[in-house]
Length: 185
Image (cartoon, rainbow, N blue to C red; front, side, top):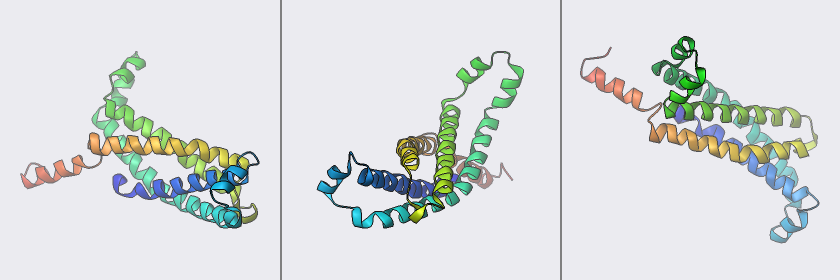
């Protein structure tokens, strides 16, 4: 499920972060003249703020099932690699971490980056819910400016997991194949 539904929060949060950055560039004294030379967004700032808040709300809402299904996929990956048992039995935890399969390391990094992004989106939603016109504050704009590249990196790592390692997709295909051969229930 995770590879199928994760596109929604990625799309909504990408739009949110980009619109917040655009709003910030259009209102910051040092960049407003530069933006106005390209295109004067001043008459649309209210709509940009409200649209950004709406997509942020949708992104947070859609992130909930994405995080839950991603956690299930990651836990299955950790379980297949027997990481928890290896960590429990080993005295050298760093050695166990070094020996983890690359896809587990990528999966953990992907999860942490996405958790930061979802937390930041939740923060932005919470702090903007009562501002006039749901306009982003300087802090919201800073958070969005930091989170946009983090979100893109997390999405890239997720793509590597799905398309490079087959996480979340091959397991189902392998199960189906085994069922057809009569080797699985």
